[in-house]
Image 1 (cartoon, rainbow, N blue to C red):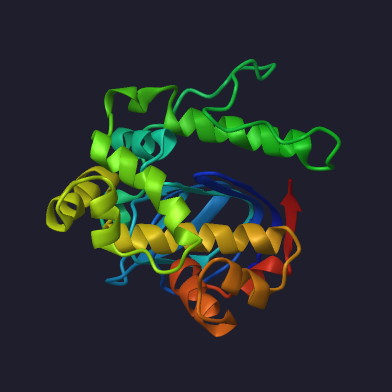
Image 2: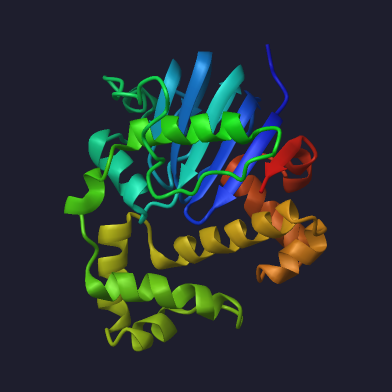
Length: 264
């Protein structure tokens, strides 16, 4: 049975968290580390057509996949691959491009009753929203799977940290070119490209595209039209934004946005 997408979504720096019904989508790949935790089995496929039916999946960046049969109650998490939780998730569950490698062999230790553990580096949602308690619980589930400070032993080189700091400011000025970023951090373009791919997990160009998508999603969440969001995030136009969004998430922004309750 195919289920439509319907639920809530929380957007934070380095985090896109969705809770609710997970529907089917087309074959796609995104530049985030993805975690799906479901109350019932769902089925995915990789680029070769191999299938996996599971209740938990960890999918590495830039790995083509699709949901063939969804679930009525699930959490779907996209983590920035250079963030502490993203790197920690990849370090704890070393997965590959094949569907068979996406299901973790062991479950993490979850917070005990009372929720005394603060979500890892993500702020609590504001009180008063109808979904606040539900979202806070979901953040603790994310913390349980990513670990508590497990990425502290995985520092990024200073030049990569500097590049990550510089890129958001460059986004607002137009196209972000590798030579421009390299010049800003005083490295050759080839060496920065090598360091960035090795330590972030994806090349600089798709990382920049991922940041643009996050900015556009944030504008849509704030009530902007798709056209305004597309231009505000540096896409050529709304169709360009829609094409990149479909390639990244396997569905269109209008289809998803219509079914989402955005949590501030």
